[in-house]
Length: 142
Image (tube, rainbow, N blue to C red; front, side, top):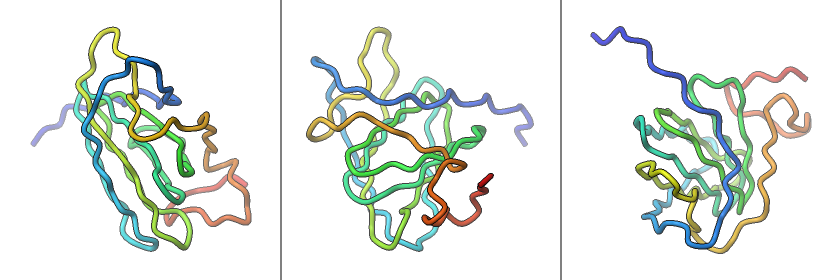
């Protein structure tokens, strides 16, 4: 049994697209409403890149206190090791694009997955509008 503590993941960064960004293989993950939370694991030295293609997605990372709610076109990246938990937020199916990339010195993250996205505005769970339900198990300080 491995009893060594797992290193804490780096906090996410608002992903910015830049000219000359790397080309990655993006995976499309449909997230139906009221379905079990999906888990995405990334190893040390990998960069986790997320972009919401459609709908609204709840994202949390083991070891970090914040929850993130991303709208279509918004992006987020994490430096591994990271275990991300994602699900649709709201009554309709969401689509998440994600990619993993081996970190390289001087590389620009993330490369464009589709069309350029608007600037990211992340809403921590504690600041979410009270009229919008939180995902199952989320804790609100409101």
